[in-house]
Image (cartoon, rainbow, N blue to C red; front, top):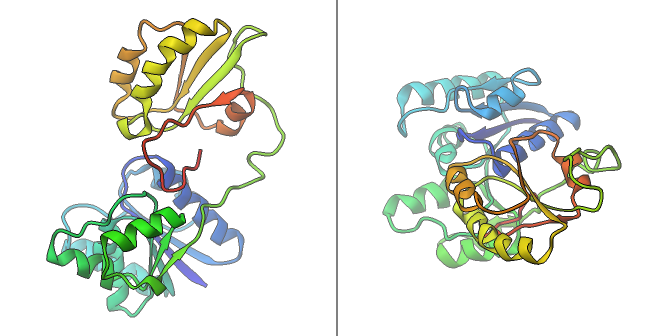
Length: 268
């Protein structure tokens, strides 16, 4: 089958990682895969040497140049199905695909209400996708409750998959901690909804009560400076920044903290 995935995101987080996982998974199962993304984006850098990538998603909605590039790429690829990850993907790749008669599947990652305060939202989110995929039942219920005009029989739940090969037995990351240390880890994007400020508050008491506990922080994000500031006076905090060896880091942790305020189906 000839499948196209579309992600206009310019950041690197769970949704973008899963887009790459899906692309590789489809490719590994013998499908012909094409990926639309933003120019210079992390997805483009991650996949450009593995499969066809069209870094054309840029600028304002309905940009005629971008729409024409998408049209030509879909026709050239003879795409049979499009997976869209964001609203912008529906307004770009999804719109062109539907005009060409190609089915569009919209994936929903976050457990949040659908945009429903403007007339065009019903067109974008209700008419362009042929099917909607929620990553959990909670996400599905949020979608149907916030947008009652969605057809329930067209909203399916497909849970996020995990590449077991990556997380099987292997080497552990080295944190250079004492032998008797309790390694407490946070792995993720540093933004407020991930609960990082709650973690900073909690660490003050945890570190005082447990002298063997060491906090290992992995990731980057727009709230990193504030997060670092709140932990500046805290003891035993190790900042590792962005890392690609997450499986090895996970193996080396004694406790993983996931303080998110909300998640659709957290990859961590």
